[in-house]
Image (cartoon, rainbow, N blue to C red; front, side, top):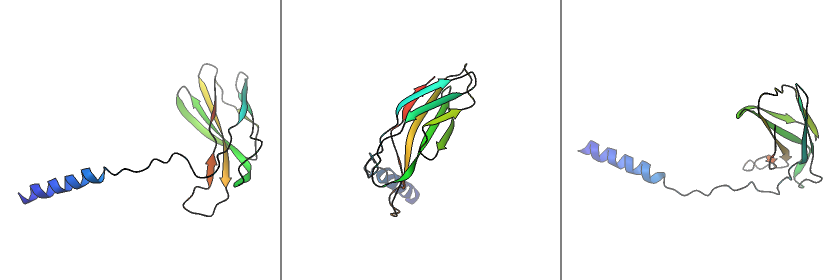
Length: 132
């Protein structure tokens, strides 16, 4: 009988400890980075060249130069995520196969000037997508 009472009390503790309400983090602190604009592509038989315009201004706590993160999805599967540094305005994807569907997501990544270990040192813009 003592074992049953013990297991019931442990089970009750586990159930009720999981019912705490935590706030959902909606965003990171600080001013957001504007996304890339004018995202275009040009394809050849074996490659795709992505081009874009970077934001004209960045929040004051973002260190320059900014980077661009490119997420590559082929036929619904994540293939790769590339980081292109030094404020790039284009990227060439060399492994294009015309019989497959592609999605490229382009985001601006900025390093934040912070020493506080409680805050992330990275900030991303919203992504812009192009589908082929």
